[in-house]
Image (cartoon, rainbow, N blue to C red; front, top):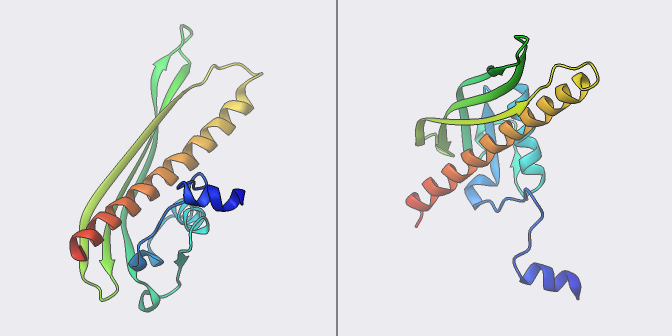
Length: 158
């Protein structure tokens, strides 16, 4: 009974994405291993599937460029970096199953920052924090790609 109530109220697991039919099978071309992993995680939480051939896909994500950078945004009084900004930029095309362009040369940029005190006692935890933030940036970019694909599909099939 509780499960029925939860599904009726619109409750979804965190990270769950509702995919349109054309997005349920996607082929990813030229993505970095980090981006591919983020896409796999996003699709694992849905009924979607990443296919190995563009012929099987309802949509094709063609990655044109990926850029990841860590920039220093503040220094300590001793001259060490103590705050960083992480920047991830993804440029891509979205194609439908027939190879027609839905979205051409779109760029998504996501950023986050973190404080990194240069003490030996926190060095390892700050490295782990950056790894987690990098994963979150990739996942945020994937959600943005899916939202843009969903918007284009609504225009094409109102």
